[in-house]
Amino acid sequence: MSSIIVSVDTPLPSAVLRQIAIAGPLDEISNVVGAVRSHIFWHGKRNEATGKLQRPMLFFVYQTTRHGPQNGFRLCLVHRGFYIAFESKADGDPEDDIDKLERVIPQGHMEVVVLGDAPVTADGHNDGED
Image (cartoon, rainbow, N blue to C red; front, side, top):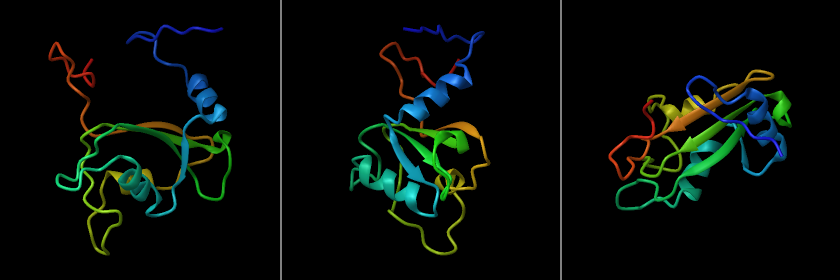
């Protein structure tokens, strides 16, 4: 067993992210245009009335045509309540955060992306704040 205490002074080592990616316990989505948006839309238990996700999501986005985390990835956390209007975008719609997730992933790149607002805890603290 190994254990890592994570704090403001001791961030999570990138090697741990790579281990999670290599272990493969999360969905792996290609960064081909539309794939990430479709995945979020269909797997986030979207409320049809509000367009907001009813459950959080965690998955990896990989560069299309490359295989394996050693080739680069984005680890994506999508918070419950994230708004997504449609499964796909109309031509000419402005770029949004999901489009940015689907941009080219450089060789060896490791990035963590968070979509939506962090939940507020019972004591009123927003977990996205330090």
